[in-house]
Image: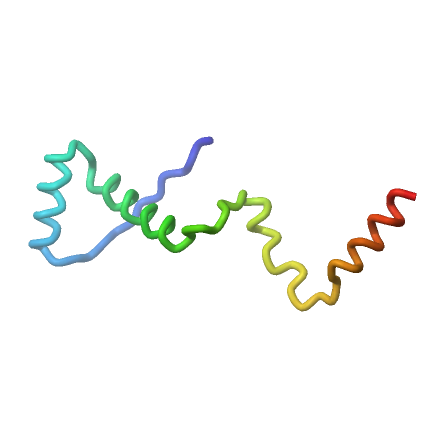
Length: 83
């Protein structure tokens, strides 16, 4: 899977920038890679215990919100389908 790279400009304290660049040099990573890793960690922490959803499934979230269908409706549907 290929991803599109998008530029992001961050503004932060100069001393912090110096420390991050030093850390990046020592770790052999770019500052961009370190920032991306950090955001991935945040995403993982927020979604801990939740299954990862594919883009298609994520696009369907909320489609049936407020709907009145339930388990009984699904059972009826299956009965009709398999007659």
